[in-house]
Amino acid sequence: LPYQLVEGDQELPIRTIDKAGNENVTSIKLRWEP
Image 1: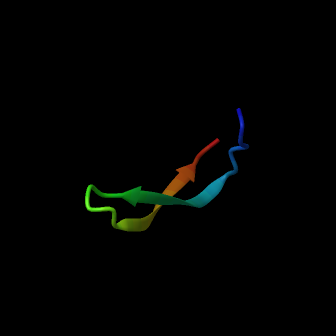
Image 2: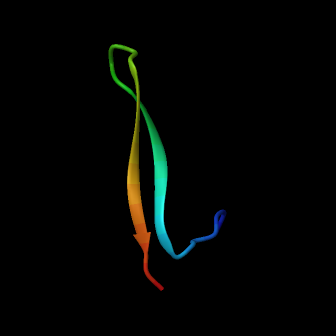
């Protein structure tokens, strides 16, 4: 894996660009459970 999974909550920033060219940055929370 190119990244290491860590236990606990982790926020991943997601950059999206719509058809109008507007950039939006949202974040999703992931919970890794061993």
